[in-house]
Length: 246
Image 1: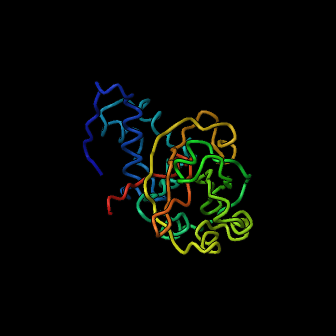
Image 2: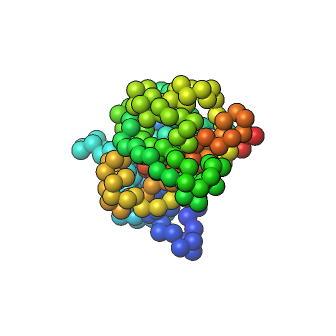
Image 3: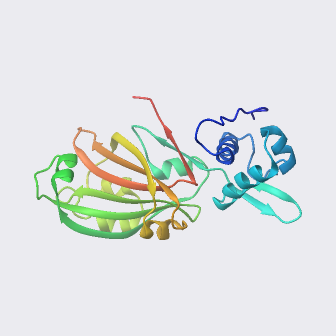
């Protein structure tokens, strides 16, 4: 834990938000473990060199995100740290969640057949108008919604994907049943946006809350595009970790 963090008062970022991000980073790093009580407001105010109202606002923001919880008469405690989600050549939700002692599951929330437009045809390296399967999924860890995603696959390659995913809850397993034994991530593009109303409902977020958006392309082991996905992640529950390994 940083004893004397430096706040940049000329950065154009509110001081309370800088304090919030500092505390969040310390929680993620393990400096404040889950279940640990946060120091009193007066102590935090002295540490950051601000008044208690500023600290209180940072704590309120972390509480609204579910990272902290206030116990009446006892203090403020770490409720949970955002889960680390590595982005690399091999990105598998189930493996990542299981590796952090979380119980992963996937749920099919919608599907349809559609023709590839110019963007999708380019991403999946198919002819314009090729029939694609669009799959809407919700990924959950310990019964907490984490990711809502829209994926496209070439229908001819995975004709039974919807039924196989609905039964297994695993994209990896559904692809294996289609004869695609493994796949790897070619690229991921990460942005942020305010959650749309339907995504906010699926993720259990308040309207106006942000989501992380990861657009990704997966290839089979022969280098052929197999899956194009636009995933929306609950920004207060997940921290993306970009893996630099080739």
